[in-house]
Length: 509
Ligand SMILES: Cc1cc2nc3c(=O)[nH]c(=O)nc-3n(C[C@H](O)[C@H](O)[C@H](O)COP(=O)(O)OP(=O)(O)OC[C@H]3O[C@@H](n4cnc5c(N)ncnc54)[C@H](O)[C@@H]3O)c2cc1C
Image (cartoon, rainbow, N blue to C red; front, side, top):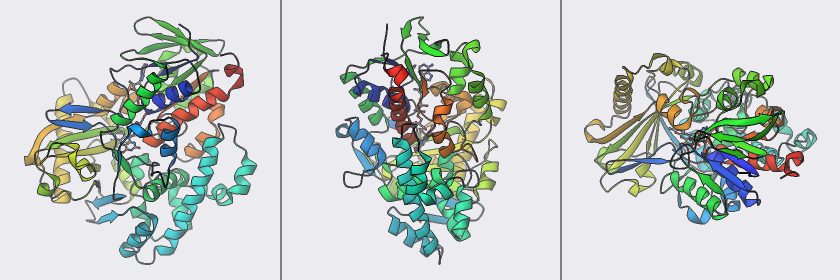
């Protein structure tokens, strides 16, 4: 069978890529290993609880008066009317184990600055500076996203002069340069685990774009879990005539003379297309799906040079008491030993590291679980391959139990809230679970780690240099917009538009 484009994987990136191409009138085939779409943007049921598999909060959305890039994307894709999203009324709430600190930061720029001034007197001026830089950053990134890979550095220099100065610095370097007091620097860096790199390694551009979007536009969450968005994207794709095949795994990408020709699935069917967009990682694509002799040396070198990002651990709890009965007042509970991200990053290379993010979904969506119950997720990250190095067939369940016990104990001790006796359902996802579910190497949930010179901006600027095989593009957490819900949705659009903009491919289809 011949198609204009084949998309491998129906995670966030794959779904948006497929729908974008379909909307442009192309004949698209979307292939997904699982029996449902969304990748980790899905949900699962245990007893009377339906658990969100991954999403804590979505950034970049906003509302009809104050639209973010994801609102605009979903509007373009015609799925807004199908979605019901709820705003979350706090940016974050963080507690520390060793230093016994606690801060709750509100949404809205003014509120955020004022609250920080309460916690850290004399931080106001630097906070105002910070948000001005965030705004310029936002505008410059919008330009980069819309440039479809054709970036004019003269435009960047003249329109976004400060961006050109701060763009190559880390979060830590910029916060120091604007003389933000130490405690304010630490508090504002709380979200570092969402991007999977400490403040000295994550670029200011990347961090600023995320936190600005959360604070300015408010974080949101779909009322029917992230699968609500995944299903809306897929339904629209099918409605426009797109062809989707679930329970279908791609085992080979056919490449001839450095051009993609099609794919072979595990049921030995061959489908042909001149555009292939992969939601699967470059590790899988260059390491397994393409024959060794057809993989360009540079593709192999770049994939090997990158560092795999955070591996995921998640303890999903269905509690038989309401948040009020339990005393769970906040939506999020970021729990770290200290607010020093460099120290915590090192600590999180070990399996038993205690740091976690707890989310009480009912505090945004009261009916997310049956009346009188609560859903709480405790998510942890590991910045190394320590889990895969020690896990065996024999110790797997013991390891899971130990991880869950430790998370629950540390959560109770830090928050002084008893949850253990209220547990009705519990499920534990480890790096092995995520590796099996997503097909990503080592259970990585954040793509490649963004660090120093291999950060968001260089990856965006270099995206065309990474097109090693004609017709092959990447979407999702391993692509140039990096990981996260909003980024993976946008990366799907970027991959589709880039493929369409390549004249030599497009003219022939
Ligand atoms: C526990 C957890 C919490 C998170 N919290 C947040 C959050 O609060 N906010 C946020 O922004 N981000 C969060 N993230 C990150 C976010 O979920 C991911 O960055 C994003 O969903 C990745 O999307 P993706 O497009 O890369 O697809 P993935 O979800 O990685 O899906 C890839 C898809 O490709 C399919 N596939 C792979 N290989 C093949 C093949 N050979 N053939 C066919 N199909 C294939 C897989 O089956 C899968 O469906 C979280 C992630 C996790 C795991």
